[in-house]
Every structure is written in C-alpha cells, then in structure tokens.
Amino acid sequence: MIARHPKREDIRLEAVLTALGNPIRLAAVRTIAVGGEHPCCDVLPQIPKSTMTHHWRALRDSGVVWQRHIGREYRLELRREDLDSRFPGLLDSILGPLVSDPLTQETIAEYDRSRQGAPA
Amino acid sequence: MIARHPKREDIRLEAVLTALGNPIRLAAVRTIAVGGEHPCCDVLPQIPKSTMTHHWRALRDSGVVWQRHIGREYRLELRREDLDSRFPGLLDSILGPLVSDPLTQETIAEYDRSRQGAPA
DNA sequence: TCATTGATACGAATATAGACGTACATACGG
DNA sequence: CCGTATGTACGTCTATATTCGTATCAATGA
Image (cartoon, rainbow over all chains, first blue to last red; front, side, top):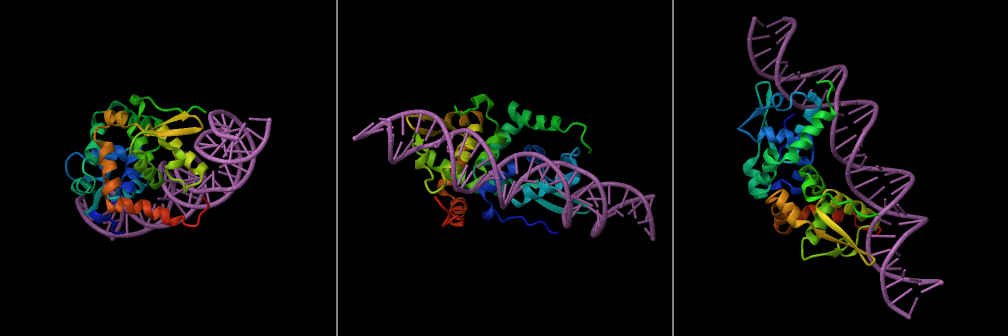
C-alpha cells in the first residue's frame, strides 16, 4: 500500500490536533522532529510494530509526517514546512513543550511506566 | 457539581490538543474566544444541551475554559492567560485558522451539515 | 535460494469518546 | 409557591480509537 498523504492545502487543523493528542504519537513526533528522516524502528522500539503502524497511519493521514518507502524501510519525516505554512506557529508551540516542559515529558513518561513489562 | 478545573501548572499539552481535536469544541472555542464570559446557551444553541454538557466538561477538565456558576447560568471563558503561559503561541496558532482558514471553517460547517434535521 | 529484517495488513478484543433522552437541581419572576 | 429558563447528572447506545497477535510481503545478503 502506498501511503495516502494529504496535500498541503488539505491538511486539517482538527486532524492535526487529534493526531497529536496522544502520548505515543507526541513521543514519536518529539523524536522525528530531530534531524531528517527516521526509520520506524528507531523511533519507539519498545512498542509492538503493529501498534506503531496504526500510529504512523494516524500521523500520516492527518498530514503531520511524510512516510517514504526506501529499501525495506518506511522512513518518517516531519512535514515541517507544510505545517508551518498551513498553521503558522502551531508546530513550534507544540515542539517547545515537548522538549522543555516537565509536565509534558511526564505525560509521556507516565505512559511508558503504565506499560512496563508489556511485550515488545 | 462544582467543576474541577486543573490549576495552570497542571494543564497538559496532550489534554489540550485532544480537547481541541473535535469540530464541536473547536466551533465552541471560536465563539468563546470573542469577548469575556458566555452563557452555555449562547454558544451552539442548535446542539442538544446534554451533548454540550459533555463537551463543556472536556474543555473544562483539559484546562481550555473556565466555567463559572452565576445565577442560573454556567458561564464560559477561555483560559487565555493560563494557556499562553503554559504553551506560548499555541492558542493564537489555533485561533488564527479558526477565524481565517477556509478549510478549518469548512470542517466545522461540514459537521453542521451532517446533523441537519437532527433534534435541537 | 532461503533466512532475516523492517514494516504493513488483517482481525479481534477492549477501551474511550460522542450523542442525546430523561430526570433533576437551582435561580428567578410573577 | 409555581412555572419557566439554564444547565447538570445519569444511563444507554453507537461509533471510533487503541492495542497487539498473527500472517504476509518486499528487500537484502549469505
């Protein structure tokens, strides 16, 4: 299946907010935001792959990330320019707390703790 | 029931994004953002009251709005200063599209159309 | 060619969210 | 004190989201 990414002008605010209103996807975006492309397996290796596939779809269909098929990897990249163009300031105002706000990091860490001992 | 509003420092990014990732609540916030306090009945009078109560709770518990009991009204007010303090730029980057982006307005309008003929 | 790696597809189970009717509470105005 | 207005509480139904095991597929490399 070729991933269906929305065109820039079809990215919806509600969809972006819904996609980011989830601790796993917020944690994933925090990692993906650093540098360029990332293979799926590098982002949250402790979460089952089929679970992550579900979240990659949510991020992709909402227009938050590009997903590109290269070799046997599906590489992820934040759609920074598209998001900045559609909703100026939104991404920065989210990435900021993601790397510097204690409670936001706690939200993600809490999630990690809640599934300790779960199968990888 | 006295509404349980989170303290400013307890407002969570994930909760705010989840609360705003819904067309009804986005439409409600668009109205509430104008001026000061608003009685519930002024915001989306076409939606059943018990449905709105559900959404007011979501907005209140996430820290997006204050809800104050005055007379027989429960007045709503955007927690602008608290949100700006916790997540600088986030609110403005959402309110902007809410009043000026055609697709965001379309998202809300689509929802309205989808329930035409529904009971008030 | 065959095992390995990286990832999706499918399906099922569970959990959470959304919608809303009805009943109830409270404040006001006669 | 009774009727009306504003809105919550509760319960139920439905819809959507989340989790993840298993099967599968494509690319790689020995």
